[in-house]
Image (cartoon, rainbow, N blue to C red; front, top):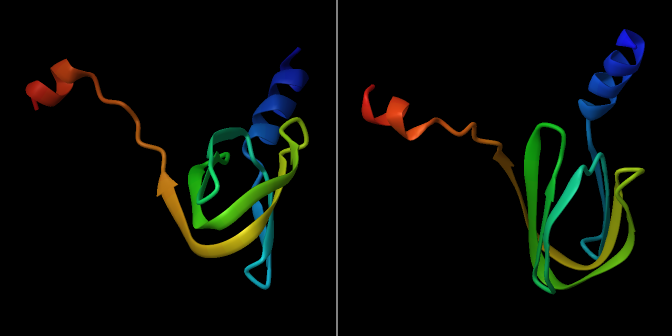
Length: 96
């Protein structure tokens, strides 16, 4: 039982990879959740961060969450990482 838990924890901490081909297509490996996909914005959750991609005519080509893969086409204009913020209870914030 413990071995199964260790494998699950290790797999959830996989590093991610981002491949961009001439600003016209991209592939993201290590995706754990899709947060938003529109024609000009793509936001995905990775093991440690959130990845935001802005551009135009963004279209999902392949999506396999179980494999952690997202492939898309379109013009990539901006890539930005956002760290996950831990939520601090209101009481702790008020009584610092």
